[in-house]
Image 1: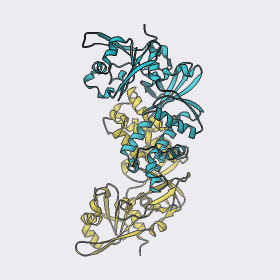
Image 2: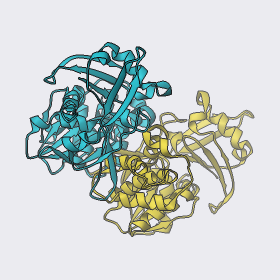
Image 3: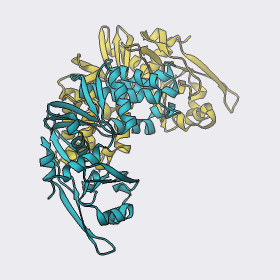
Length: 295
Length: 295
């Protein structure tokens, strides 16, 4: 089969054997934002035409199922596990240059309401969670998928019960690039002491908006070096995310990009919490698990 | 005398009579960022040359006293009142085109440490607080100066005891202009229902980073109209600021721009707090009070 993780800024096509083992992978920066005139079929042909000729089924996840993607796949409400998500797979069909007919399945995203009744959504991350369900096993688990929009999901007995999104990565990026804080950040190099100081800072009174200004005033006061200030800011926002999302739990699971999960593991240990990093490749495993539900 | 409020993006020159009443004012956008080659004296001559010839003393406040300004005036540590700030006034001198000698005084900013020992600074707002000391009278007061970097000061018996900065206005602006949230904000028009919903949202569990993502998901879910979403975001960040800065107090004072203080008053009343808006003109009154300490 082909398992395709097609997001906003990247496209990854995995070729899996009958046991779900990845035998080959192709990556490109042809995320949905760079696809012109809805030429999704042509983009996919360009990425892996000879695989398309031989491999079925084809199952895709990520922003490819959004309104801006190939075909909108409506959100499935939580709680949901493999059966609910698989039964909401929607199909796209096309004819390739050699007149061959193709069909691909798109996984839906998930929606849920938080305690206050406010809507939340994810698209793509749910497949990564499905990919680690076997590793998690039965019982209750908290899973964090750090990123631009970090997701924190509660999983119980193979179903995603609820989740919350935190805008951590994007807030960090826009503050670094566009606010006064970025003016004293000469380097992107990671500084562990600065990061840990930021994570600890998140525990102080005053709130996030006050702690953010402290990045500037601590640099002005000479208490934080300019070269540390980006890592200090990163620690502050991740620390606030962890305090809001994981204050009452001692142990959680991390899935995603290796650099990011390592950063979150460091933040968790700074806060005396245990985090379990899952090996990458959760997305193709989740898509393989979904494919088992297709006829 | 001349009282000059010279900030990052604007210059305001007030002519005051012997009683401190403003008899005339000139405003321009010649903030310190737009002054080239440190031509501060020439910029001031351009703004009010005939006043400079006749009025003394000249007292200035704001970013004109920063490292990027005319001459750096070192921060005075809190607690500080009129005597401490007046004794730290620093002078700049120059000769105008007609060979006349001029001297102007620059008010220092204030610094303090928050409970966690983290540095904080203000420059310009301290003079506005000095301008309302008479109105406040003796006793303990909390004063909020909303803005790009909102200041919350504790004033006791005519002295600024401590303060905290919240990066509220700038966080709102960069998220609106540069994050995914801004993509669904077609208008800058104020929407009271959206703003109040945002202020109330800040009381929910989940934290600011989660509430920020909710601006997007609530629009996607159709629970918040696109035209309301900028006001909803504004309510969320101001609500978080008020919860962090004024959670334990029932009454506080507002000083500053009329539109902003009205917004904060609405947020305060949504949270069942009382706010007292002080009439504008606090800066020249504070500079007049400082001038009384000059020989």
